[in-house]
Image 1: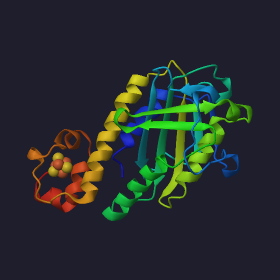
Image 2 (image 1 turned 60 degrees about the horizontal axis):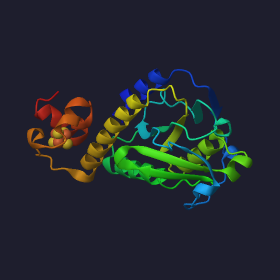
Image 3 (image 1 turned 135 degrees about the vertical axis):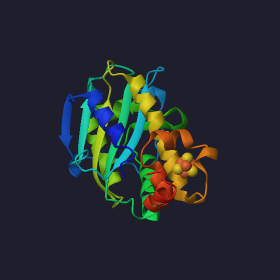
Image 4 (image 1 turned 90 degrees about the vertical axis):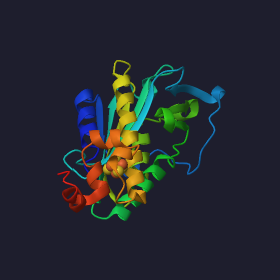
Length: 245
Ligand code: SF4
């Protein structure tokens, strides 16, 4: 599962050293409500990605454990209690997974479960609005949560706790960005590409005909650009037969 490694490396190179880094400890996890909560505007301190500001989100998986060696939360920019109003925002998850490429069904289940987690984290006082088509994840943070000490360390630990309900996920690098000087356009462009690869991978894992011709397939631009997708579809043997490798 190295389809996303270049995206992970590019992001790490782009961001450089974080302002803060915390090792994961389940005891740090912010209270999770288990279902969505409505934070009204009158109860909100600010919105991450509010006021038309950037709010990027994407998730990459890899079985290269040098890229995601342990569970950790990284922060670029001010923490929640330091923000004075609406802020630019990005949340990026890099998930280390067990080697899953050999069993397509297992790979498919793992990917589906990762999507499941994305929509099933509900930190108290931290209301997310996700827009998959525009790769945005906007968050309304309540005044009460701020008074009670909410932080990215605590929210990040809640995410990691939920990710670990999936036994195929071995490690999580969770990145929060509020620094306005970060190149959010580059992150958004990468989020679009990651989304295209994820969609193509899902289609392949759902099962596409073995005799499908790449030249008449709508995924060709993605498969031509990202190494590994064609092999995922046709397998090593299939690639040899077609003389593609
Ligand atoms: S490998 Fe070829 S046939 Fe398969 S999804 Fe990609 S472009 Fe389509």
